[in-house]
Image (tube, rainbow, N blue to C red):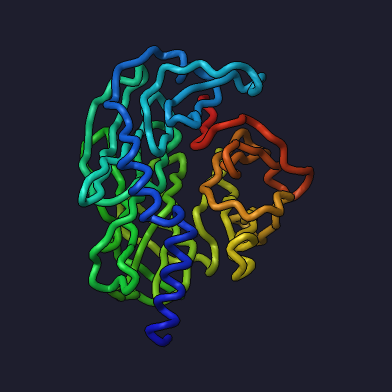
Length: 319
């Protein structure tokens, strides 16, 4: 691949993962989120749909009535995820060098740990049990990144307290062979129910792959090409991911379902280009940010997209 081609691919990846970073940093500099405060537990009560409001505050509505007035009381976050009574809140820290604070919160939304990271918030995810937390940030300055940007993805075991702030050194098997390259980037982790197996995206040499990781053995292997930002179903049998289907920025992505037993993929009924890591509303439905709102669509390719919550992002069903 020529240097010009590599640069073009990288710039597309940057746009895909979170928009134009310079614009984001300018926005963050104008609006720094407030420090995390302890809040009431109503937002994380089971049976709620938690999300970020347009102003960044974590709020919730009943799963059975998502058009209800949101109950606020959570912290201000740039990215948010919660499960099993534990939450992760990524907060951008504007400055000459962009940094992010990853806050771990308990059931009452009280901060229990804070990890300072380089870069700009991009993805956040908790495992079903609330034990494992993951994040992805944009960073600058990696020597292999000709466009100036790359991603760092980390994993925290909240039970042991052990954190890996960048998993790019995990031994990777690509197409059946051990793989080494200086440009390996990971993003968009999703955990299995055992808190050990995980899925993510890896990018190298202008291509993206779906990978399956083993946290305990500290190894990962590619499963297929062109599958980004995976989200594992609650029963662990299916993944929904975004697949690149066009070079047109307005129609670049299409959400697909992947059956892990057969490796058969099915396009979802959402035909708009969705640049988000979806979350599962229930066993049959996924939800995602599209424009300023959260939408849902059946995960089997049937039906049609439906508006779920206006002025929201980072949705998560509290079970």
